Length: 402
Image 1 (tube, rainbow, N blue to C red):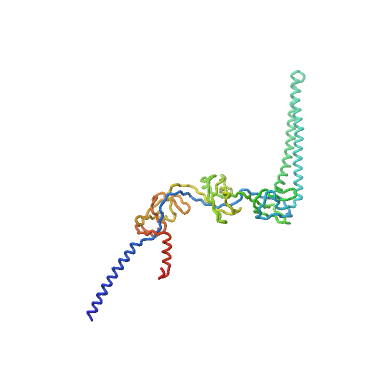
Image 2 (cartoon, helix red, strand yellow):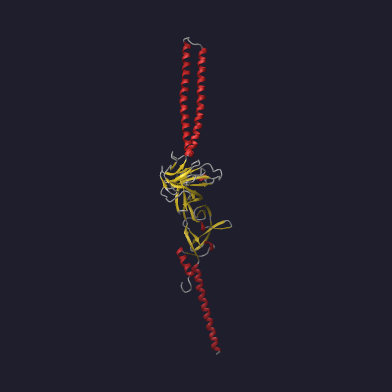
């Protein structure tokens, strides 16, 4: 029995050694075959530009604001905000009896002042002409001995007095005309786009975006009665800093995104103001919206991206591939299945990409996913995005289902 026990112990030891050797070999093979899973991208040359994003606002390229600068009661309303109107359409009717009477009186006064000026000018010009003829006639008589030098001097004095009198009288009449004109222009402004019956007339075709007239209520002279946006063209206005102004010009393009309608388009810069706003110290840039862009409404906000400092044929990589440690920027590239640490110098940054000015060359395999888990010399296993998703699903599957 003692002999049987010894034989059993010997067999157990041999089996254990056999299993240990086999397991160690399999573990070593697994470690050698695996490596760190990474995704890579071939380094390439491309064009990159600095992106400068600012907020902008959509508005109609042609907009008419109707402001009635006098108190008046609205007696009828024929259009509401959102309606499409044509030039000449009646928007509402106002009770402007006293204002229209004042306007008519002012126009009569102005026309009368103009007519009086013209009549008086004709008379005074004739008097000056007669005085000039008298001087010439007196000089002619003097030459034949029929007039004296004293008579010539008197004729010239009469001529000068006639000219001075004409200029003084006409100056007074011109002042009267200007006063009458000023009063008429004030009423013209107050009653612009209003006919003799008190009807408010649409000055252009488009969308009635604002309508503040309410039937049987008084209108406010401190806010627009109506605003009409032209139907043909829209524009974008944005405010930029003094640092950006020298880098953009009329004719350049910018990317525009309007979140309200989830629409992107490219707009052309029409103008760049050279004087800053006194309050904001920013410069206004106006961009033309392409004619085929629809569904835009005045007042919508937009993100405007200007592209500046363009670099062509540059090495461009995904920004997320670049790591930083102690102010040193670096990436990993794959060479012969091994990760290699490479320090880089960067330049311009764009939409999710960065220019690399030194450290990388075209054609290298750049690690874009998994680089944070690498060290120089680590073995790597290149996987695609599809493989990565499949592996993740397998890892989450319950035991026995993988």
